[in-house]
Image (cartoon, rainbow, N blue to C red):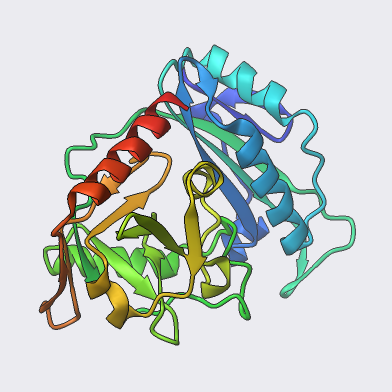
Length: 277
């Protein structure tokens, strides 16, 4: 039997249910974290917890996270989940006057474990998405808020056209990320990644690379892609995956991999670091 943690108790997965009046269901009013489980432990939990707490503050959701690690460890043990992923979902809870939440609302929390998916179809080719990334002036998109339609439509469009994933840009035609991963670029021995002001997710793997390598956070225009000789994407599932091709919406190539020896060496060092860290 598999368990989930739902509102202060462990219940069988098939019996877990959330109210149709929950604001997460009604309005996407909540936040989540996806964490890798390795050797029966939640990998990089402190980094995920920090992002979760800051995201909750941005959404103005009051939730005590002090016992979260204990609940996570208990669930991993109950499910005997040695490898896989953990998802934590926190919504504002049940109770609304239209869009306005009631004053005495109690947040809903769901924690579940997920088996490692088949990763054979790893991202290698990207098409520029016709859907622009939601800007920071609209939503706090630096955090994993429950507003996934932007990424879903981008991903569906990419799949329909035969590409692994979509590259999202903002209204200024600056690159942001893919539908589910941060992006890094290498040129002349230097590492670059779009800055948070561009509207990108503050990814945990992104943070680890920035904190341990000399990565420059900048605004990068789509037309500047041709300057870089190696591009890779990162998330907790892939860790780091090299991109081979990027095309525009007319499926015309705007960037193709042609890595220099120095760039390959840097990428290899990053991959080795992430595997060990």
